[in-house]
Amino acid sequence: MTVSEPADAHRSTRTRVWILVLALLLLGGGATAYTLRAASGRETAVAGTADPGFTLDRDTGALYARDTASGRVARLDPAAPGGRVVGGPTCDRFHAAGSTALCLRRRPGVPARSYAIVLDRRLREVRRIGLPGIPSRARVSASGNVLAWTLFATGDSYARSSFSTRTSILDLRTGYLVKNIEQIPLTVGGRRHHAPDVNYWGVSFAADDNRFYATVSTGGRTRLVEGDLRNWSARTLRENAECPSLSPDGTRLAFKKRVSDGPREPWRLYVYDLRTGREHPVAERRGIDDQALWTDPRTLAYGRGGGIWSVPADGTGAPRRLADGASSPAVPR
Image (cartoon, rainbow, N blue to C red; front, side, top):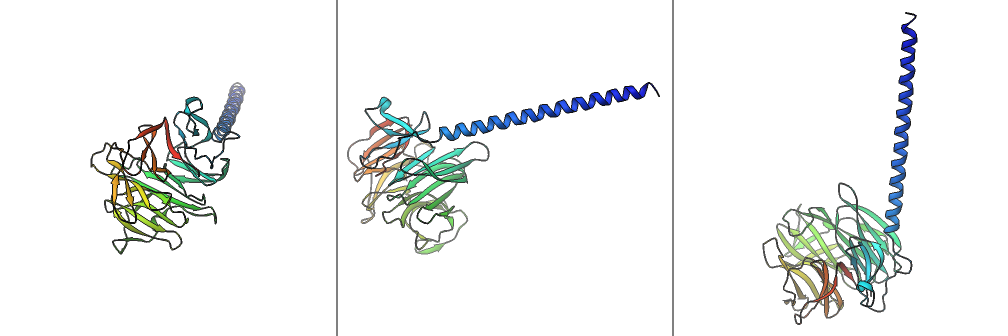
């Protein structure tokens, strides 16, 4: 008994020492990991902001876009190296109008989550909203007062049969945010429509900051809708019109129309006259999966094949490449 007691005490002491060493190692590793994560977060925040002096130029009609290589917003400038000046924030989708810009940025991790970031004309962050989903469409009204964005809730392509979207509208004048417009009263063919499969995407605002156009999908069909924010209502205008973009004079809508049931390039770009109800295709005969931008009353810009192209809106002319390695065009007049 006199021999075993010191041996047991010695083993107990060694056990306590190893437990203490292990605890210190775990604490040290946790602190290191926390420090690395914090540093990574700071680096991401710095990389995601605009360079000093990089602002929205509203007077020259400059075209802004997302630079694919860096993920940052750039101003297209033929005189600059590479044809652009890269200095804006990091975004997955971007749009700007008036003195406001909207940046959609996906957050790392699973499940998919994103930020909708509101920026002023100096591209400084004004507001940040965290939402579930993958960035898809972004739009700012001409005045810069009302913003809309669409995120994929499930799926990541409009060409697939199984996808779900969430479209939000933010009024900067009041700060009021509608996280999902699916509950807006919808009239289809003159009758109030109720269905669990309603999805909206691709909002475009009129100059009055009240009327808007968008795509609604329900019952296996896509339709163009006209919405009224003040009265909180929406009504369908026609079928087979997606991602509408209202012309500066408010008389025409550019949209993508499904012309094929196949998975490859199923849409073509069309223009619809709201007064006459007539439509015509533009000279771009290749498939387009984008929400077109009116760079002026006569010209459309859009993303295709990793670049930005333009085409006359009246159906004449031919497509013209504006930039390689770019997407999300915007002209912040």
